[in-house]
Structure formats: structure tokens, C-alpha cells
Length: 350
Image 1 (tube, rainbow, N blue to C red):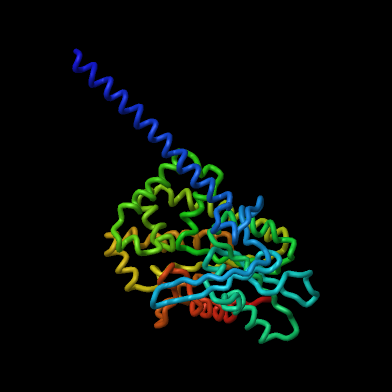
Image 2: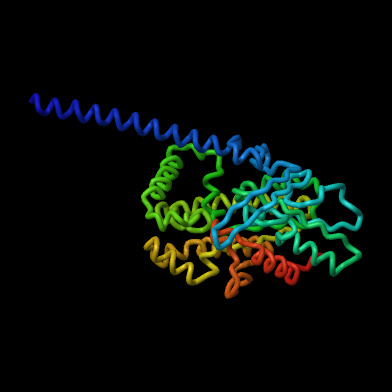
């Protein structure tokens, strides 16, 4: 009896210690998430500001320099924003009588990991439009902001609809926009979400050095997340559709033409990279096709809603040049060039 009692006491103490540990881990992760969304860290605060409508924006009128890259690919970036925080050199002013405005939203790929703002596909598109038509002034505004996903795209349009854009283009990055929908909802500190967050962090900790060498946020982490939590696919897509429906309604109200472009990750563009990642992370074909599956589901929704869309995967496939930075897997200037040319050749602005 004494032995049984001792075992019960030890189990009770152990359970209590595990409960305390779980509570500590929960509040540690809550603090980490809340700190991120306050945008007060040194790295964030130099470039981002919180916003009640779009959640966060670029700081207006900044000029920052970064030097980074690999020994094989070195890059210096000049991050310049205008008076609204857009990645444009010129300030936004009152709309001119002959001005045709295109407001572009997207995440860090649209924001641009580039030497100059003029290298972005948004600015390349604008340059080509104005070179071909001297009677209309085309103003393509690059509102891309790192971390953005569907909730931000809706808030961004709400905030800047007063600019009277004729077109609102959303450049969806299919490599992580679906995964990040659940991160940006108001229930992000629920026990369920905290558990999933801890799970993915521990999974990352136990990866090999070669696996950790990849900046897996840009396409790979999304696949691994849905491998661990397959039911989250439907939830993520429901959230994306919810905000897209609100964007559609606002565009109809403001008489704005809505266009969606679908930007793939390097996984969907380079077969040899796709194969390397599959072998490195030991993933089956179904998991490796996760990003494509989600993209196709979104395309079905866009068709159903009769929304104009353009899948950029064929634009970037089968190219001999490198189109993504090795360091962080963002699209490079050559990819921006291809996309800008495609938009000019394909979309008729009327």
C-alpha cells in the first residue's frame, strides 16, 4: 500500500510539474507572437508600423541600406518608401485627370528584395505602359509589404481605396500565403494555435543542418505544416475566401477592377530543386504537391466568382537564368522583369 501511495504521489507531482511547464511554454509562445504583432522589435520598427486597418504598413519616407547574400550571390538593397510607405520613389499625390491608377498588394516578393524600387515588376509594368501610351499617365503603385496575406490584402484596400485606383491587383504568393492566414487571425493565441506553433518550432529544431540551411518559410514550411496538420488546409482556404469575398464586394462598390496573380515558390518552378527538397526532407509526392493543390483550389474559387486571375508559374518555368535568390528564395530582378513583361503583354488596361 505504501508503495502504491508513493507512486501516486510521484505521478501527481510529475503531472503538476508538466502542467506548470505547459503553462510556461504557452505564455512564452503567446509573448513571442504578441511581440511580433506589436512591431516594436529593432528589426521590425525600422521598416514597419502597426495599423488598425491593414494590421501593419511600411514606414513612410524611409531610406535604408542592407548588404547580404551568399559568397556566390552578393546583394545590396536600397529600401526606399514614399509618403504612403509604398515601394515607389515618387510620392503619391492627388489623382490627375489623365491618370490611370493600379494599386498592387502583395507580400515580401512584391515588396521586392531588389537593389532599386525601379526593378520591381510593378515599376517595370508602369514603365512599359507609359512608354507605349503618351496620352494616359499610368501610375502603378507598389504596396507590397513583407508578411502580408489575405487579411492584409483586404485591410490594405480598405485603407487606400481613397486613392481611387482603377485596378487593384493582388499578387498572392502561393508558397506561404495560405499557411499564414491562420497566423494572422484574432484567435492566434488560442491553445490550438499555440500548440501548432510550438510543434513547428520543435520540428525545425530537430532538422538536420542541411535541412535548416534552407529558408523554408518560402514554400517549404507551408508543406510541412499541412503534413503535420492536414485539416488546416480547409480552414486556411476558408479564411482566404472570406477576405477575398470582402475584397470583391469592396471593388464592386468602388468600381475597381480586381485582378489576382498567383506567384509560385521555387519548388514549383525548378524541377531539380523540387526533387532535391523531396529527398532532403523525405516527403512523398502528395505532400510535395501541397502548394499546387492549394493554388488549384483557389483558382477554382476565382473562376466561380468570375475574378480575373493569372497563374505566373508558366511565366517562370523552363528559364535558364536563376529567378530566385539562393539566400532567401525570394524572386530576383530577372523574375521581376519576366513578370513585368508578362503583365504588360497580357493585361489590357482600359
